[in-house]
Image (cartoon, rainbow, N blue to C red):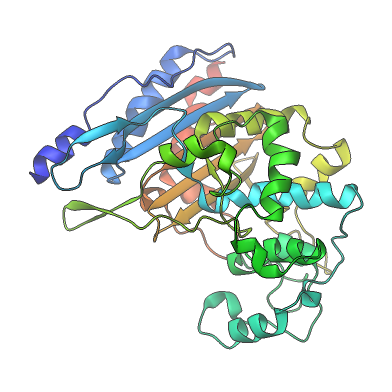
Length: 380
């Protein structure tokens, strides 16, 4: 039965989510990339994977592989992945949160210099985290002022603003902070359609036309997205195990459900600058700088690095408990964006907590070698 399950999962098929390119990229480029990507998916035991590539402000290509749902008992595949299949995008959510907070500051609704310490419940939370064995509590000084910008740039550990340490737990307090600013009980962030989720829909998802994206799983008007969302799986001992669904609310560090075709719409809106002013868009991708002048590897919800002479702007997502992984990778000088979503943790590569190293991802490297550094790119 196990062998039947694997056979069914990995049978090739043409996705109905595939899109014809208007950009200057050859079909053969996608054909060879697609074969290599599907081979890598199988090697990583990923049940379902979706991919989209944006080139010069257009959706150039998208496709799905494998299954978003199947019965782990008898191995029946009953929902093939397409470019419109919604997935839990995990920490790729942070890219939306960074943009949202910059928008809110420009609108005069918040200041990034505000101190998250002022939020109700902060002292108890911070003391718990700093005294725990969780790595994100290391060198966390609860008696020092930590600004919203520190949280958004992941510069809260140690002397605030002086060093980068990826801290998703701190990002998860941002939805509670917005409830505090709105005059609500901070617990409202975990109930229903919270303030941050409403603002995301109004400021980003709606304007970008992201109809297959939920700002939280409480968003009633997008119930079909919730019911179509890919189930998460873990591969262990030669079989797939269905994982528990993720929490429904939007915390800040995670919470969005989306498809690769919708992430392509998001990337196109970012490329065109339709979601915010030129000032905000410039700040969004500008890395933080420490007091000693050192440029840090993170901006507002985005890693920023240079690799082989190319600037790479990206964020990964990983949720081992929900069975999900994701990657959104931009190569701005090439007008390229890659979106990848999977319903297992198979894309996780263990990026260091204190630097950006997307080239260590075999999925990112496959894309970069094929479309940026490979012979086919040089020939274009």
